[in-house]
Length: 454
Image (cartoon, rainbow, N blue to C red; front, top):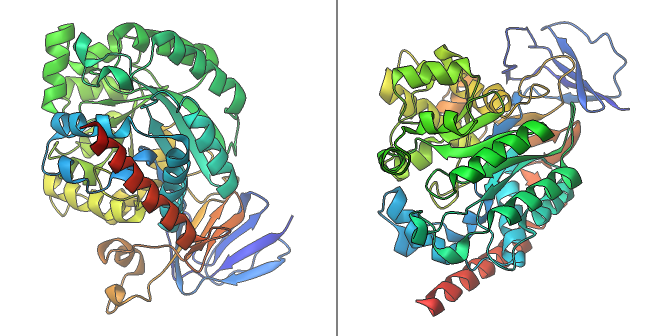
């Protein structure tokens, strides 16, 4: 196995307090040594990479996304709406997804994520119309081709609007279909142990789109199969009102009632919790994915990151869907997280170190992973390297702070499991021009299908 020394970085964020100003040593898929400034590695080195022009961080970890939404960015009919109305506008559009669209949307999302320094991406795909029953299989195929780490959550919707839910009838599946496919996907693709590249989780979309029975059965399967579960929760006040009206329970009470209040659960958004609920979530070791850009775009609110972390919740970061962000750039999301959290807590109480933690170890822990997210001996060699040679960084002094404050947008190099996947800002093995041409055509075709049904 080749032994690589990333030598003397301009700045390094390891995610812990260890001195690694002299760089790090990688062998195979793991970090094997951290080097203090002025010291030499104790291992025999095959390749030395001069990192003196790079800010080095753990690979960024995205804990919530909807890859298919790259096909409906800035969609005219969905502009200037809040969550429920936004969803009702886009559900009929997304019902037109086909396999080619799904594959292209997944590849564009993953490529965009990798270019921004992301090495592990989670996707929540819950919309499976007729003809797209193998959506997750297609996503696994794309992730394997790109050699990126991915956690695919088999989403679901079973409560149609004719039964009091939000999605239209033609976008939902029966509970038995969902259960059978969930078990199939876990048994076909879920990898276990350190270094797993593909994992599956189960992810009913939200309390307003699935039945109570499906939530309970999902919890049972997750416990039996030892996999994580994921859903949207407490994103808006409308959702809280829905839960009170339909179940007679606040969302966190509902979560406990259906068997989800435990360490296998991570939630997207998690904005509207009270103090007692935050304490319960922390005690149960639930994870929360903060989605700042989406929450600003849909005016949903601001996640209470500091209180959640103080209670013991693992807080991570996600870009959310590319129709409510409207991008898939995780290093940009780190900046958004820093600023929106400062808006809540004050500029002296939230630092760029907090935002980087949410985007690395916070996301990893929220999704039940402790083998990446920091640069430590024995951890996976998932690494992002950024240059500060763009005009936006001119005149900056603290390189690590500048990475966030000055608005880094693209990684120069990205390593996943010890293998270079991005070099000079380009994802290796991807013809980006050809991919984007196909993706744009697919987006136009999806819009035409929607317009034809109106």
